[in-house]
Structure formats: structure tokens, C-alpha cells
Length: 96
Figure 1 (cartoon, one colour):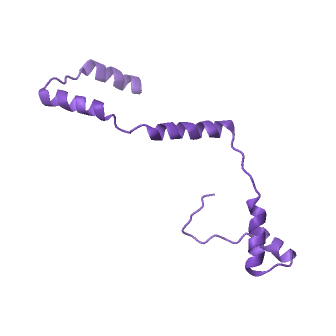
Figure 2: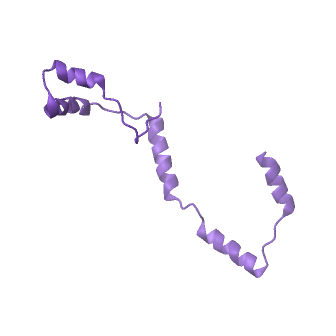
Figure 3: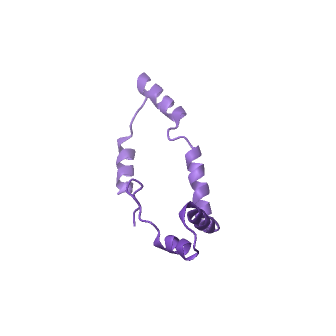
């Protein structure tokens, strides 16, 4: 199920019925029910923690290696940049 934050969400009927059974109404009832929900805990698996660390490591690396880009620009500008067509063809075949 996809949750759309722009559309109104249905009221949790279990939450409402628990507060009604407790005989509490209004904002006090919702506050008490909210306190009960705050006691929930989440435990992440080791795989999830590893993925979180990997995501952090990737976000720390710049998307563009600026030194390499500058070196290639200099080679192109000076006319020294040569493309090995056989190497390009080999890499294309490996990718498929």
C-alpha cells in the first residue's frame, strides 16, 4: 500500500475505540492514546544497518571526480586525447 501524504488519512478506528472504552474523550484521550503508541520500539536487522552505513559512505563520495574531469578537458583541449575504438567496442560487448 502506498501512502500519499497529500490525501486525507482515515482515522485509526482501534485508537478511537480504545480511548472511548477508557472513558476518556477529547484531546486528553488522544494524548493518552498517543503516549501508548510512543512506547513502541523498532529494532533494525544487521542487514539494514549495513545498508544504512553503505548509503552514508556513498553519499560522502562526490558524484563527479573533478580531478579526472579536468585532466580529460586538458587532454581534449591540447588534442592529446585519443579514443581506442577497439577498447570501446570491447566494453560495449561486455556490457550486454
